[in-house]
Length: 429
Image 1 (cartoon, rainbow, N blue to C red):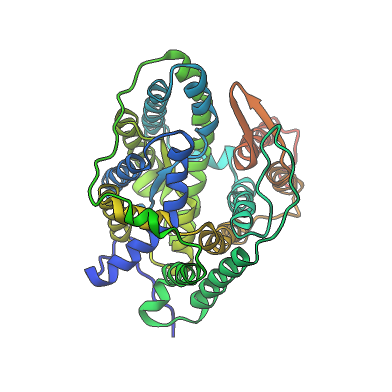
Image 2 (cartoon, rainbow, N blue to C red):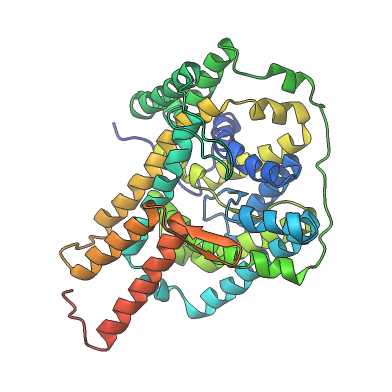
């Protein structure tokens, strides 16, 4: 029997939709609150504004793109520099607002100039590699959370020998195995919630092993308003944060393309990249004024859709509404925050792996001919730059991983396109 696919515009009954929405919430929760924690901001404000931003995004895109907007990691380094040396988080907010305005401006450029240029600057040989790198560069984080690899050591810190924690590994591997088996063997409604089921199963096991901080839930307030912050205009902060906008633009385009491949829809054309950028831009302008870190489309949620084949925007909207509600209900928010790293590490090993495989799927579906030297070189160099740890600093922003690979891929693609136009490169190459 063919597996059920829930389409982008399909609206499910509330009893079916609620657990599906909660599944998306649990997938993005850990990463989206980590960013404000690192920046010294109330996580509840990020949860609130990301929920509101996702609702705005789905409205601007006419309910045509199933994407959740979570806190972006690309702005952590420049924001920390602004916070530490240029007046604090309120000054960084002006850079976040600029980022939103930048996306809005680019959306109008795309609207009037179209998207054909994307095939030139990021052909399938590059795009497939970039999408695969998104998952591959996140994979070490999943391994670290799972207790299978050491966390990075801070500069100047004494390197300690890595000692594997048996309990962490047991919980993470149990969660991973439940997610794997559920994704393959579950039937009926259980077939569309294997990620949620795996997280709950892992949480119960971690609770029985004393790995859950119950006191954090009991000490939390039932109702609490997030802490808002007023922005301070600072041109220095804008210049420091601006380079990260290019990184997130490449990430946004990559995420939209892979989401289109998963849902078998040309989302770049309809509802269009311009609407996607506009919705994300408006969301970030509002977040910047409210005191929340910037957001971006989330790979974790793309992974959930790829596994469950539930693409409904209504499910994404449900996750956004839950995020808004949980930002105001302290005990519920605290309960989700107590999900151990081991549980999230186990399930993200599956999610990040699925994202990487989607990149290879693009090579197959786009029929990329690697017998052509140009495709071979584009794919090879993009991969090497993305997974080798190579990096370059542009101001306060360090480009590495997917972002650096995307930029190198674009430069090479334009170079080869120029060669072909000048007639100095054979079309067969």
